[in-house]
Length: 418
Image (cartoon, rainbow, N blue to C red):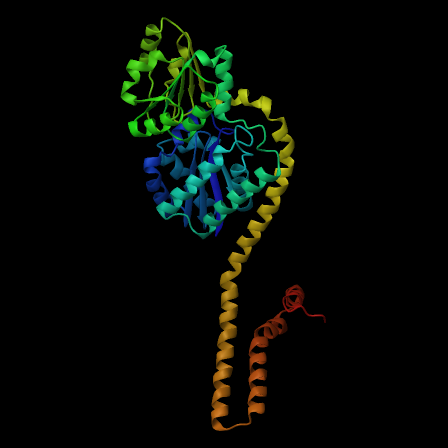
């Protein structure tokens, strides 16, 4: 049994590739079941705007890993040869270290960002609900969460909080002198939009609107920020009223098309619109960026915005990596011990059989009236002989280097001082 991570992220693949291999929430359970059935004994999927990763546990040799690549490509109807250059495959210890680094925010586009930890926890919950999170991956994810907590509580990796949401606010401030006079529209009502709304609301905009497919969810989020809620079908009529648009939904198709935005600009008399698309796949058609008076940014565009506040976090990375190295060693030790469990069980079963046989023999002798002292002596001698016979025989039959290796092993196992 081994662990393998297969995936791509913002460092290995552009947005146009990443958005083609996103696992949507409504089909995640089905995908997990298929991965377990075809690829491994255990499976989990982490799918965010910046990464898509399969965590697998099973008999994963070279052929099986190739099958995982082919499955990922075929599932998303992408040519495997087209996808392959962007993928990484991390076996065993590398997979464990990667999981710990991801959970700790060391592998994120924004160093130390906290959102990924929640996304990994959601991935674990989804795998558990689908029945694909077994003992090994369950332990891996739980240990990842513990490592992330230790890194954040003992280092400065999470200091000077910078996230996609904070970066979006900073970018908007470059377009508008003050956000207090602007009207902000949020499309979606998930965790990312909630975080963005928190950052933008702190700037005191003139008005906040939340649009969502389900009005109840939009109203629940809007209530927190003294905002108004609308349904997605009302966007065409109300888009022109907003200066800032931030979108992050789980839709597989664009929410805002070029035509809708063109009509909104006409109604605004060419007043500029600042738009941030944090969704993968994208919520806003890329062609919208071609329009005059539209400032459209995607998750990849935010990379340069977040660099300025990362010095303190970078200086803490070495300390965080040291913590992770220690935890990786402990996890791999647990894996090795777990792999020894069948051998230990067989050894104990053999010893138990010998014990039971000698006890049964002793009881018969006692029932016959034999001297108890002699019976106990015979029991102990018989048990000792049976337990010592296999290693003694193996040592006597071995020759050359094999005998020296076996002798060293026996000295270590039985703590002998010959």
